[in-house]
Image (cartoon, rainbow, N blue to C red; front, side, top):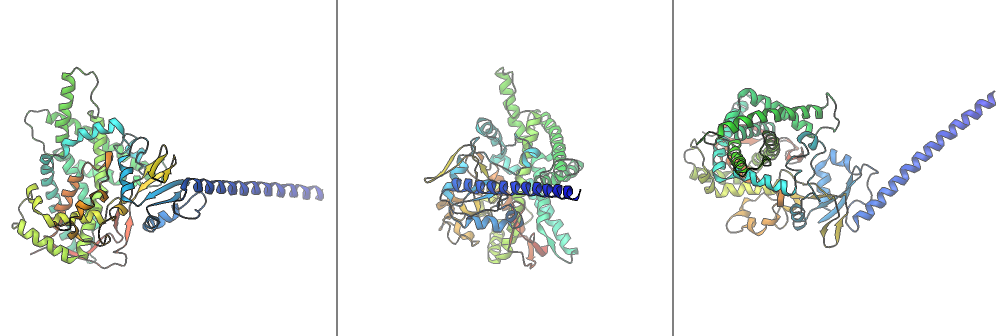
Length: 501
């Protein structure tokens, strides 16, 4: 009997050993195949000699995104790496990056976070390409005319003044200073809602939007696991709630702007004027099908896309505006001197005409966007082979990633130095290296609201000079964190902020 038991034990041991050997050699073969595949795909591109089996650089990227991506940029104009089995090519050259932006299409679409399509839908404006995307951008042009931007300017100014007043009150009672990033985030939510939706917002709807928007943002960057209780689930529910509310607001707006001589007071009003005109033209031409992008549901979805796109980028830029002006008091003093000349009455409303007189403030805004582009990378996926350079073609399935950070430094003198004077009338680096400046992208998906964004930053810098403020020292204050837009690692903490006497 003991011999029989021993025999069974040996057989069981052999079986386990065999299965462990099969698993080991299976993984080894898979790893070798993976590495051979990468060698074939990368050609002569520089990059890591070997990658971590199957997961690539994902752990390094999650733990230290700045070091991962900026280390990748140091390989040269083109380099390769992998993340969770996905082969990617990073582009640190302006010419190649611009070509990729300009070629963006269904053959090489933009790729957002894995949660984006679930939260924002597959018909999100970032995922659109071809004729449908082109007609939408044409339909959106009336939203960013000079007349429309001047209406938004007043709303933006009022929001900034109100929030700066609150910041001063918070600073007065705080013993430990205040962190500006979350406060600026709140400012931008209020500003975007007011500019986009104007008179259709009640206090209750505004609060509901802010709660839902926070859950939507958290869901975007949460673990891609979807079931009740997860952050992604909460984000999807929040997005659905926002779209339903927006759809009701769009209906109200259409009714209001149908009234003759009704004046537009927000972005949605300008949109409805254009939309109603398109609908009437279609009816006069006996078209049985409603024109694209004119239904309440479509407009609500696109409005949500706009609100989401506007938020994090603006928060990054305004946070860095405070950061850089604290680091460069000479620049802050020059801005203040210009503001004294242009705005002798600090309480007077700002106008587009006044903004055009702010030559140096414009230079500061431009340099801020060059040195600290909110989104440093733009991921595309090759649905077919894509030629990037004369001697390299990315195979199908490759993630192609232009580095906006790198491009914004190509050509510019002393590119790592914050130097607004590079854009003055003598040096004119904004003209010499215009094609290298890719903060707003290029090609079919270039940011349609870039004038709005630049006005917002200039307004903020202008009104910021009415304040005294000082940066609190923190060991990480000059480091950069990715969320995924970039911020000072300490959140830009100030010792105090107060109105100037």
